[in-house]
Image (cartoon, rainbow, N blue to C red):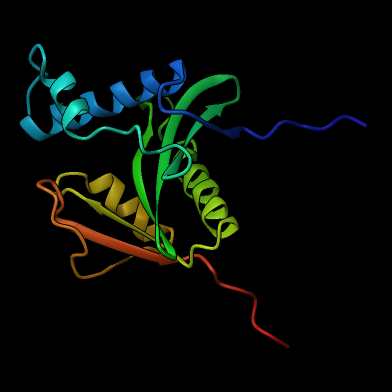
Length: 169
């Protein structure tokens, strides 16, 4: 009997893994370009990576997932652990793979991992201009909540309960 490999596969890696480092740089490049509305200038992406490091997206403070679409390196998402909850960070799908279910696959994977460590909810903050990301979160059950963080780029805050259990019968 043969098994069919799923279109999207995720794996936990350290942020300094070459695949993770590549995806995090691409993510931050897109964030810089969208924020400024122009191509990134020399040094801007490095400065942004230093301002918002991802090194805590590794045990014991969190995790980072990379996603492959079939065999292509296609995206990433991270979680930072807090007492009883997790914070979603660095959700990114490479442009060539957008529209193929990668965002949904990454959200499902981080939600499974958050549940597995006992988190009861996932929270995130995002910018106003990231309309596609905000739509993705709402489509997958995240609801807007009052501010829980005060970062310079936090303009919208979302939360989703992930400890949902089937109703008793």
